Length: 298
Image (cartoon, rainbow, N blue to C red; front, side, top):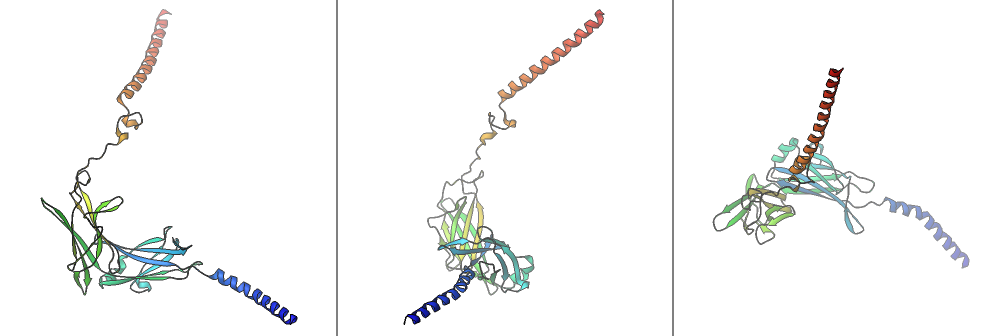
């Protein structure tokens, strides 16, 4: 019995030793999962671009992946439909613009699919991501009278070669500010009705604008499953004219630039210069006179 137990122990140890290198190799060869998203953006119905976002989960948190090479295609992944090759930055983002060579393909259909394929690396396998969008256009209009001001935003989708109202599109409508969009009404977001429009009563009176009283109205659709990200802007004179503050360094002070030197300091400096050079010139003239007198005396 003892001999059998010894044989079992020896066999188990040999099996563990044999499996050890292979298990270590399997752990080393394991790769992280790359998460890749493709965003579609259209600004003012003109500028269209794609934004690739790559990230991976590390310690239960998503972290951006930099340096990923991604090939972007329009509708199918062959060379003729290549939009471009991009490399993600330190934030895991990369931007691409649809090239003019794909204009005919872009105009030929009312809906498209964007395809992204990442190049495999030591950390990540090849990853494929797709984003399908329908062509849209978004407009913003205003109405102002003595009693109220309103903003009307319309969204239309191209279906079967015709523009039809796009309903149930959620968006932000407001005023562009440095920190984002200040809502123009009482709600944070608004949704289009069956006619593809939403009307927002303007509630932000006495809002400062530029020196002419203008500010920018914005309607923004974010991460819509059908239409992507849409943005439209319009300048309106609904604000209070704000005169630009005078630059403190433009005033004539001791800490201003040389072109803004205080007058009293300029007068003092030039007086000293004139006094010094006047004294030098006076002494030179006296020396010349002394020499002339000496020459006459001899």
